[in-house]
Image 1 (cartoon, rainbow, N blue to C red):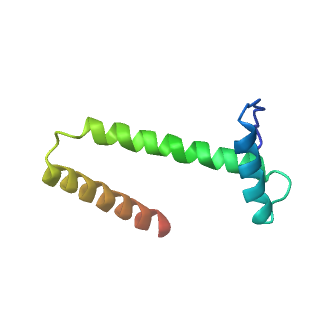
Image 2: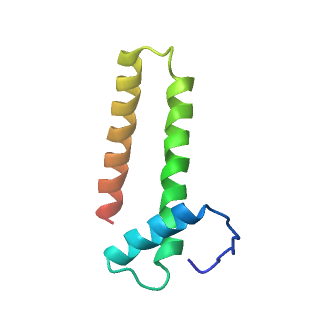
Length: 86
């Protein structure tokens, strides 16, 4: 993380105490609050991305999706192993 952005956040006092207590119980150290927030944001972005993809593919035939996934996995494996031999 060489490029960092500084955020100013406001949360309820209860949330602040709950999170800081959790981090302290886990033996937290400097930077853990930022790390916790970044991981939580990344998880939520991933969840939203998954929801969007699921909604976009709601009408797709499951067999077609399985075939597409299998084809892509095979292509990645083939590419991975071919590059590994170089």
